[in-house]
Length: 197
Image (cartoon, rainbow, N blue to C red; front, side, top):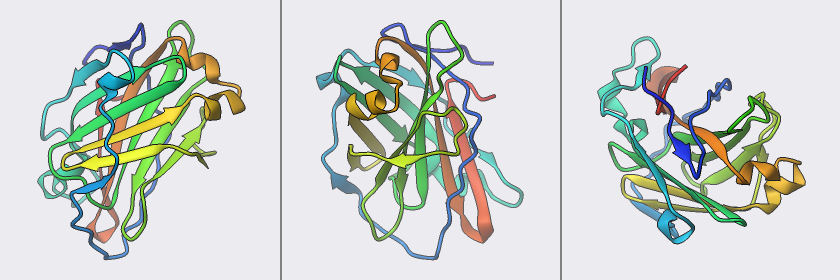
């Protein structure tokens, strides 16, 4: 088992939620979208790496078929007012894929806060936040999403966290990243880093 990594004291957390993506046959060949954020401009980034080719698959799906969700690197940085996450995949990021950053306090198991960016065809990527720990109550929030080839960045202010009573997570947290790709025939490929549970 790979060991947790920290952010300004922060580190890996478990993600209990399973989220579904639906594909409807559309394609999108855009390699760049929005304003990509270099997390080093927000704060000192914590970086963790993940090996290529370690996606988990649902029955009948070949992992090599959807490397756009195969996580290779994650950079996370924060300031007192902003949080930035950069996900790097093994292929250019295109629909249908979601990236999730799960956060927990350093010295406690709760609250569990999940920040998700979903890349769908025909619309701008959406950023959702779940502060319940269940993965069942995601709400759309204002954030900046940028896609640059194999990389996706999320930049979000502290305000949505404060509004849901979890602003204290900005002080210090453990983290985990997860991805899910919708594959043909209702299949799915998932990946996580730095540890899968």
